[in-house]
Amino acid sequence: MNLKSILLLASSLALQSSIPVLANTNFNLFANKQQNAPAFLPVEDAFVFSQLQQGDNLNVFWQITEGYYLYKNKLRVTINGNDYTIDGLPTGKDYHDEYFGDVEIFQYELMLSVPVANVAAASEITIHYQGCAVAGLCYPPMTKTFISQ
Image (tube, rainbow, N blue to C red; front, side):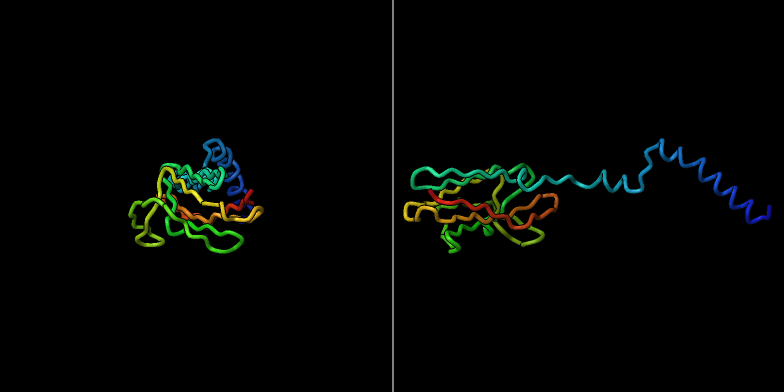
């Protein structure tokens, strides 16, 4: 057996003996990064959306999880693809956002009422919104579409 073969055999034996040790200690090169990274909620859990048409109004609600917020300037309603002016939207909280600069946001909950008395039955009403996590994740714009009654 030559020197090269002996070194290769010795290296192989040393590596084999260390593998069980690494396996038993749950060794993970990325463990620190995973433990320090914040866990972000799915968008449906961060911004729990519900709606209810009551008579001449479509009432839209968001339950916003603590540590998350919705942008006021990203809220939009379209009816059959046409922009609809949202009247009576509450004042948001002034906030400096790392993505969009100085904005107004909503935290914890939001309700808006869309008058639908003059909207034809079977019209498509779409609610557009976007929010972020305070910890730094910005969700893509979301839409919810309903057919008026």
